[in-house]
Structure formats: structure tokens, C-alpha cells
Image (cartoon, rainbow, N blue to C red; front, side):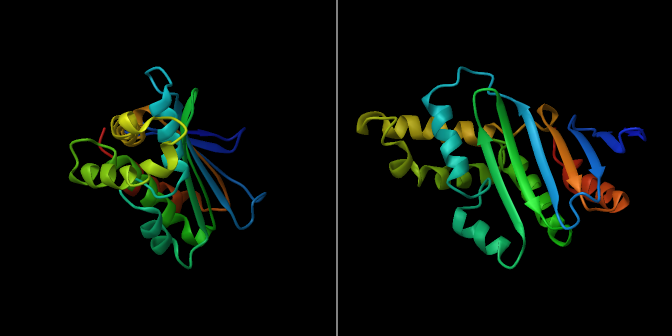
Length: 193
């Protein structure tokens, strides 16, 4: 479903998977596009495992991609991509040039599809996130509880991005609305609900 607000110069899409996407083409950012996806914070109590999950997102990588793999994907491109899981919100943010916007959409699609626990790449992503355990978790866990807390944190990181219907994505910047609609349909509407 598409709703156009001429007064605000925005287009609001409600996708079949429940995700909301609000786009605003603007000349304010001549050579940049900002993409921010936001959902309410974790449903469960924000505990140590969520704090560690947030650190996992900050340590790099995206879904099953390690930081090194992500750097290879982004080589020569003007794209940044970050996730966060804090008490009141789960989010991802990408800053990108108009020429590299499709790469951001590929990463968003990967983040959501990797996060589904029935997906084969979930186990790979879980292992990848657990590699960061020793360096990230020392201040949160004793050696005896490290594996248990690390596993729970990795699970929470991945499952924080598994429901597209939880998210509203805001896209602002220098882009053509028709091309953006094509990217939304191909990469966001295709995320399973």
C-alpha cells in the first residue's frame, strides 16, 4: 500500500510483510542518502545479554557477515552500516551515496533474512558472533558464565532483526522515487514475515 503526502513530500509504503517504509527525496543532501530502521526495544528485560548483543552489533559485521567480510563487500563503496539494540529501540542505520544505495538494501535484506532462526545461515552467524565473546564480554561475565551469556547474546542480536513488521524504515536524501520504489519492492518487500 502506498500513501503520498504532498504536503510533507513523503511517500509511505506499508509492505505485505508488515514493514513500513517512509521515503523523502530531498535536495538538502545532494550526494547522500540516510536510511534508518527503527523498532521498539527488546520485548524482554534489557539484561546483560542485550548489552552484549548491542556490543556485537557495534563490533562490526552484519548478520552472518563478519567484519572482515563486510569490509570486502564495502570495498570501494561509500556505505556505512551499523546496528544497535538499546533499552528502548532496535535500529540499523546506513549512510550511503546515491550510487551505492543498492548495497545498503542488500545489507538490510541480509540482516533480516539471516536473523530467522530457521535459516541455515543463522547458525553460521551465531558462530561468527560468538568469536567476539572473549573480548567483548569480560566486564559482563565471569569465565564460568561466559559461554552461556555469549550464546544468549548472539541469539538476541540475531533475533532482534527477524520481524520486519516491527520496523519502520525512514529514507531521506538524494534519490529518484521510482528507482527507490523498485529497490523497496526487490529488497524489503521480499523479506519473509
